[in-house]
Length: 628
Image (cartoon, rainbow, N blue to C red; front, side, top):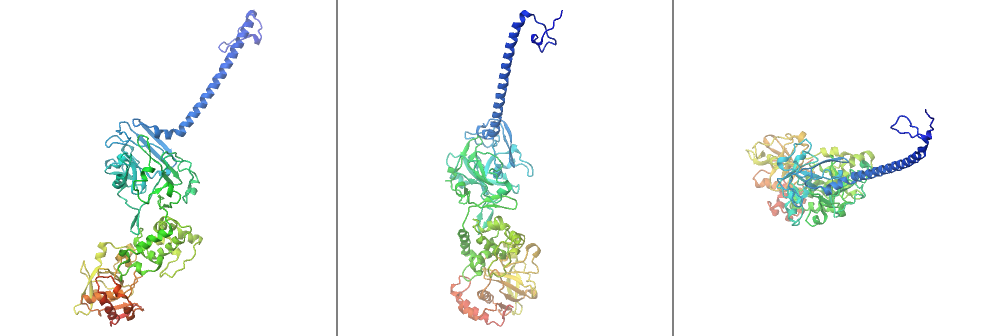
C-alpha cells in the first residue's frame, strides 16, 4: 500500500530516478545524517572553490613575472650547454638568436676558433640595432640579399665608431672577420686593432677590431672625420627609466616615448636615438662593465662618453636616415681649424705664389675659397659656400658642428629650402664677387654645381711644352704626351691654362672639354686647388700658335708678379716675348714693379733680383695690352 510521503521525508539521490519512502523510526536519524552530510559537502565545496581561486591567482602572478623578467633571466642564467632557439620581438628590431650544443667554450665563456658557434642571446634596443654586429669568418659569409644564416654566426661586436668595434678578447684576435653594413648591405672587413689591444689588461675579457674598408667618413681640412655610433658609460647598472628626447626629430617620430623599441637590456640603453653601452655580454651570460677599462686604453679623443657628451653631442643623419653623433665644438674652435689650414705651406704656397687662400680676404672669403678644394661631396663651387659659411657662423645658439657636418648633415642640409618657403633669414651684407642669393644655393642646385678635379693622369694629358715657329717669331704650344699642337680657340672662348710651381704649363681646350659629364672647367680643377705661379686664359691661333695670354682667374686672382714670372720663363727658353700679346689688367703699370717686394719672394726657381727688371721690361713690351 502506497503512502503519501511529504517532500521533507524524501532524500533525493541524483543517481536514483524515484524517491524511496522511509519508516518513521528511522526518519529522525536519517534527517540528522543528511544535515551533517549537507553541511560537510557545503564546507568542502567552499574550500575547493577557495583553493582553485588561490591557484588561479598564483598562476597569473607567475605568468606575469615570466613575461616581464624572462628576457633578463635568459641573458644572466643561460648556460653554454643549453639547446635554445629564441625569437624576441623588440619594437622595430627582430633579433633571432641561437645557441647550439657541442660548442667549445673556454673558462671565460669565449668561443674557441674551430668549435661550434655560440650566439649571444638578449634584448637589443632598436636604437642599437644597427650597431650591434654579427661578425663572420670569410668562408662563412651568408649570401648577400638573403636573411642571416644563423648557422654561420661567429662573433658579436659593438660598432663604437665607423672604424672601431668592441668585441670579446678571443674574437679580437681573429685575423679577419666580416660584418654586413646596415647601409650598403656589403660585407666589410675587420681586423685586430693592434694599438688598442696592446693597452688592454693582461686578463681582459674584451678587445677591439678595426674596420679596414671604411677608414673615415670624409676628409675635413685634410683630417679624417669618423662617425661615432655609441656612447660609452661608466655605469655598469643602467637606468632604464632615464629621460630622453634630445634629438631634434625624436619626439615627433616616437611620440615623445621614453624608450626606444620597448626593450629592457642589461648592457645597452637608449636616450632617444642614442645608444649607451654599459656592459659587454659574454657568451656565458656574464656582463663585463666597459667604462673603467675603456677609459684608460687610449681611445681616440672623438669617442663619445655618456657623462661628458650625451647631452651636448650634435645629432647628424644622412638621406638614408643613418644616425651618428660628434663631439660638440665652439665656433672659435671651428674657425681655428680653418685658420690652421689657411697657414699650411702646401695650401698657402710660398711667398710670391698664387693660391686660393692668398686670393681671398677675410675669414669667410678664404674659407669659401678652400672649401671647394676639400669638399667631400664632389668639390662644389665656392660661391655658395660663402652663403653657407655665413649662416653657419650666425646660427644662435651655435650648432656645435664643424662646417662640413653642418652643411650636409645638420641645419644646412635644408636651410635654404626652408628659407625659400618661410623667408626667415636676414639678408647677407657683403661685396663678394659673384655672390649668389640664398635661394640660388638650395641643395639641389648647390650639389649639382661641382668642379671636376684632375688626377695625375688627367693633368699630364694637358701638360704642354713651347717651341719657336720656323721663323722664330711666334711661339707654338704642343701637348707633351701626344706631340700634337694645341687647337685654336675662339675670341669668346679662350682656352684655360695653369702655370704650376715647377714652371709646368697646362692648357685645357674648352672646345674638347666634356662639359656634359664634368661641368664647366675651372682653374682649381687642373691643380686640384693647389698653389701656382700663374693662372688665366690663353688665345690660340691655328697650328698651336699662341695669340695672347691673360690673367683672368676668380679663384687665384693673379697680380703683376704672375705676368712677370711667365715673361721671364719665356725669355729663359730663348723664345720671342713679343710673339704674342701680354694681356694685363688695366690697373697694372710699371709703378707696380717698383712697389713689389721682390726680395720676399720664396720662388726658388727665379732670381728675385732679376724679376724687378723683368717686370719693367714686360710693361714696356710692344705687345703689352690690356684685357677688356
